[in-house]
Structure formats: C-alpha cells, structure tokens
Image (cartoon, rainbow, N blue to C red; front, side, top):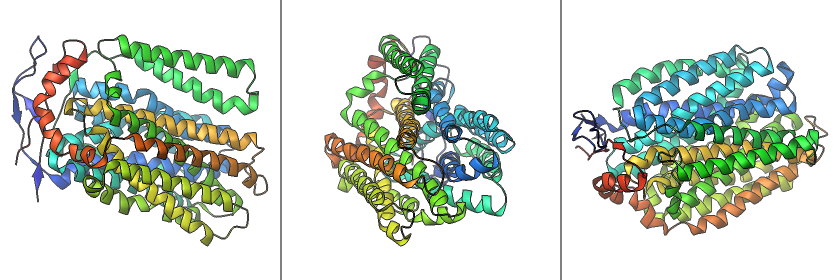
Amino acid sequence: MSTDTLDTAPSGAPGATGAPSTPRTRRARPFGLVLIAASLPMFMATLDNLVMTNALPVLHEKLGASVEQLQWFVNAYTLAFAGTILFASALGDRIGRRRVFLAGIAIFGIGSALAALSTEPWQLIVARAIQGFGGAAVMPLSLALVAGAVRPERRPLAIGIWGGVSGLGVALGPLVGGAVMEGWNWQAIFWINVPVAIISIPLALIVLNEVRGRRERLDIPGVLLAGVGVLALVHAIVRGNDDGWDSLGVIAELVIAGGLLVAFLVRQRLTVAPMMPLRLFRDRSFSVVNVVGFAFSFGSMGAVFILIQFLQVVQGSSPFEAALQTTPWTLAPVIVAPLAGIFGGRIGTRALITAGMLLQAIGLFWIASIMSATVPYVDLVAPFIIAGVGMALVFAPSSTALLSTLVDADHAKASGVNSTVREIGVALGIAVLTAIFTGAGGELTPTGYVAAAQPAVITGAAVLLGAAVLGLLLPAGRRVAAAAGGAAGAADATSVTRSTSTAGATSDLEPAGTPAD
C-alpha cells in the first residue's frame, strides 16, 4: 500500500519571535488509511444533513412540528455550523488541527444522542445546534488534514476521493434515513452516528498526525458578530411571511443583521489575527469559488428541502420510497465526483464547475416545469440524473480550486471560510425558498403544495444558472487544477515568508513540511 505524508512536528517549542521550529518528518501513513481517518467523520456529518431532510414529514407528524420548526430542525445545525466554523479552524491552527477535529467528532456524537432522546421540537432544535458545533470542527479540518497528509502531486486524487466520500454521504443520507425510519423509528437516524463517532476517534488518533498553522489570538468578538448576524438574518427571513415583510420587527432584525455583518467585515480588516483573512479574497480563484459555493448550496439544498417533501406529501411515498426515488440524483456524486477530481487537471476546474452549475440549473428548471400531483416518477428520472451529475462536477473541483493557489498554512482557514459560506447558503436557501413557498400559499397537504413549490424550485434554478455564468470568471482551468499538485510543492518552501508578510503581525507558524516517500 502506498504511503504519503506532509505532516511534520516541530522539534521544539516555537520561539518567542514567532519563527517556526525546525520540523522533523513523521512516519508516513498509508494513503488509504489517511483518507478513511479524515473522511469517515466528514461522511457522518454529511450523511446527517439529508437524513434530517428526508425525516421532516415524519417529524411533522410525530412531534407535531410546524413548518417553521421544520426549517429550524435543519437551520439550527447549519447556523451553529456556519457561526463557529471559522473559530474552529482558527483554534485548530493554534492548538492542533487533529485535536480540534477529535473534539468535533465527540461533540457531534453527543449532539446525535441528545437528538435521538428528544421528545419536543425545541429539544431537537437544541440538539441539532450541538451537532452543528461539532460539525464545524469536523468538516473544514477534514479537508485540511487530507490536503496536508499527502504529497502535492497526489492532492487532486486525494481531494477527488474526499469529494466522492462527501457525495456518498449525500447519496446514502436519504436511503439510510428512509430505511431506518421504516424498519425502526426516527430516533435511530441519530443513534447511528454514535458508533461511527466512537470508531472515528481512535482511528484518527492512530493514523492522523498533529498539524498546526499560524498560532494567532482567537477572535471571540468576530465569532459573536458573525454568528449573531447570520442568525438574525435567517430568523428575519423565516418569520417574514408570518409577521409581514413590512413589519417593524422583521425590518429591525434585517437592519441589525446587516449592521453586525458589516461590523464583522470591518473587524476582520482591522484585527491582527482575523478568523477570515480578507487578503484571501485577493485571489480570484478563491473568491469566485466561494460565491459559486454559496449559490450551489442556496439553490441545490433549498430545492432538495422542497422536493423531498413533494415526493412524500404530494405523491404519497414513504421516507424509504422517496429516498429510492431520489437515488438517480444523489448517487451520481459517488461515481462522478472522484472522476472529476482525477481528471480535473486535464479538463480544468473552470470547465467542470461551470458545467456542473449549468446542469443543476437545467435539472431544476425541468423538474419545476413538470411538477404536478400526478406526474409519473419515470418523468423525473432524467432531470434527477442531470442535477446529480451537475452536483458531482462541483464537489471535488471546487475544493481543488479553493486550495490550489494557497499555501498550506492557509488551508484550514480557507476551508473554514468556504464551509461557512456554503452552510450560510444552505440556511438562506432553505429559508428563502420556504418563504417563497409559504408566501405563495403553500401547505403541507397534497392539494396545497405543488403550485407554491414550483416558484420556489425555479428560484433555486435561477440562482444556479447565475452561478454558472459567474464560474466563467475562474482562472484558466487546467493551470489552476494542476496548481494543487505542482505549485503546492513550491508553496511549501515559501509558506513561512508569505505567511509572515500577510498575517499583519508576528505569529508562530509550524510549516507543513515536505513529502516523505
């Protein structure tokens, strides 16, 4: 079995001047084990997103949850995730990425157990938030650990496989959720996370080496400004239809949210240790990938929220039947995402990402045009496949383009920024598309669903189409994709110089080191 490593450990404590210590290369780990150890917890967190989405109609019945509470079952997770992911990434840089990664796995497992024990909607919302705090440490550090644990020339392959595992979580989420709920009960969709967490912790301890980035001060005020600002924004959108968009409360909350988010950006510009270094956005590839990632999550996940319930509420499918019906959509990333990662260097990330967003837009426009209470399932298969292939073409190439031109020391924060943006996209996509649905008179009944669901799905498709056009602004594809391999090696040699010059303050940096055969 082949081995790779970029992980190193300092031979001594960092000096007072912030200069890094001389690294010593650690023993190489098998390539496959590294991927499993870093990807299994990420798979667990990804699986849980669509497990929850598929369970919403059942939770509506079993817990007596309202439409607003159904949104918060999803958004409690995504907002907790988005609000703390930059903090978790910065904490990983400071005290160790593996250490924070392990803490995230444990917190996610505890949140899952509490979700399974919930008997009231508010209890499940709180438990989902706890899961989100754990996921905030798992998702970005998983990618950073993968990227930092293999040789530069093998990163596109590793990231492609990582994207495939993420796609597998998307694919199996509805299936696992549907099968478990029919064979057992809804609580079991959360209990299954607990043994995965128990297995993942010792595996990561054994296989993954500890890696640190810049040891900077933690930006607690920044965490609060970003977290409360995003929460206020989503909460205002969720309550807009019920309270009225011209109501004083909704307008005030939107103004407060905007002020807090602007204050967050100002603080990130002025502080010497930002959670979200604005200098990263000078990189065109990084900036475009983040905007496209937001649109991807907004359009796709917002539409999935609407369509999963369409299959159950309108067409009378059970949770497991609905999961099987969506497999042409959700299984495509499992097959296509690793191939996109492998061949991204030849085809180019720009071509793949643009094509992926365009295919998703076409698929959703098609679904909206034929959606009805009596539409035969066979008519949905082709647009499901098109949308699924489109999703797959975005997963791995986006991760490659995100990290390709950045030094290793920036990987955790860059991944954290991207994950934050995408999770905010999920929360806003669900909130906005549901607001469109309810604003059009939508109800969770067979007769009151379709007419209101169509404009919501069309909105998601339009956002994806706009992102496809924006994707054309990405740098020339093959050069960027190849940078994940060749340029990353050169970047390692200059990471200390560039990091010190751009950090804005003296900082301790433990370099990623050089590959060991």
